[in-house]
Length: 109
Image (cartoon, rainbow, N blue to C red):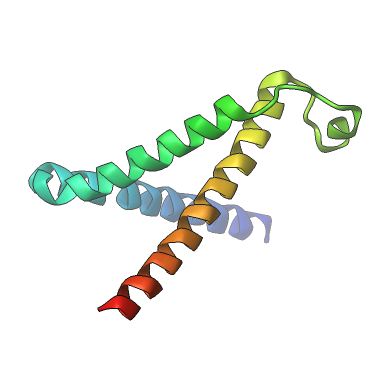
């Protein structure tokens, strides 16, 4: 029985990594074949990276005693968590503004 479980796990690992390679490789191959279509995607990825960088730079590196319960014991860990939260807040505001902008622009047409 253990041998059957081991074989099943190895097959599962192989299929997972094959899917992972295809999920990463197919878009990269498509970008290489058609770089003009990839420009919009790259702008989006760079934009999210810039938003995360802004959030990381605005985050405090202070490690409070309450953070240690969640395994955050370093200044870098604190900045990563704080930066992620600030980035999420920025993205929520951008989404809210986009929804309002869309509604107002449709109303004015």
